[in-house]
Image (cartoon, rainbow, N blue to C red; front, side, top):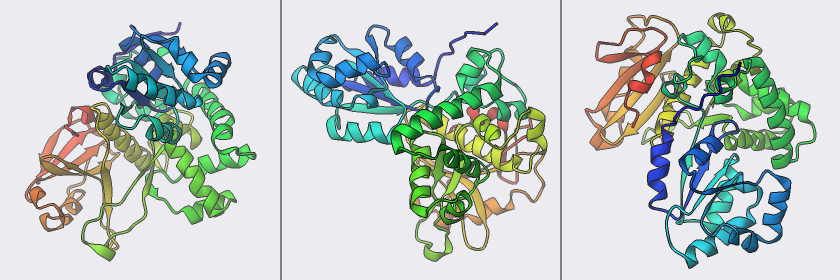
Length: 398
């Protein structure tokens, strides 16, 4: 029997607050992240319009102003990027009749939606990202795992837990739907098999520097095509390119981004991992865990209505820090270790990024050093905080 449980989302309070200050609110995120559920629950006083419906969409495209006139009291327009002409009509409506919280827009394709918003609703909307549930949200499901390997294996798409769908079944359907619908729609890719091969090759590079030329060669496509396809994956919230940190160190730093998948369950499926037990012995376990940590930090910030910036650090001598965040009062250096213990010498390189390299003089003397690891004890060793994976939501990433 399906669980059919709807969990409260952290972004709800931010969304409601933002809607009191802007005439429109835009919520973006990947398919199946819970956008529709959030919008309908938080803004139940507004009419709900799904623009994936062909008849509804055709009406909106044929006469945007006439269509919008039906919703003078406001509405939630789901998958609004499917009818971009409607945004110009919304601009006219909100300019003619000022007032906040009138329209809520949601969409799954970042670059399509942002392009349309930039043209029509700049300054008239607040944009929030809703990613699949963070660990603390996910654990509101009774069926959510409590151990690390099944947490990585199952990922965080809520429908897996809400509807009790087997992970492999969900992921196979998700990839098939994504490839056959979204890829065709956005890039008009004819050879879907090549794109699926490309997607799997990307999975094998998670947590690694992204060499587009090598990736293109392995996939049998051009460098230009590989760049376009990576852009599509990022715009669809499948992957995230984390840029290298730079200040005034010039040639000492690498300039290539690292690639991370934003859902560990999808990542595991693409790597042909079909059980939680396989995660424990997989040669990419460390990279899978690193990408999971990056995704959790991104979710924590997105759920607070914050954009990222964060980076990784790597110089040409080989010193690498998995994640760097500049917060208002400090810089945080984060290393990830998937094992249950951290070796005594496993934190020394965190001190190779010094105050002198901080760039911002306000951050001097305010560097926190953290290792997120697969163990259970939260302790501080030699000035480095060892943060258990299960307590990632408890750390202040804001």
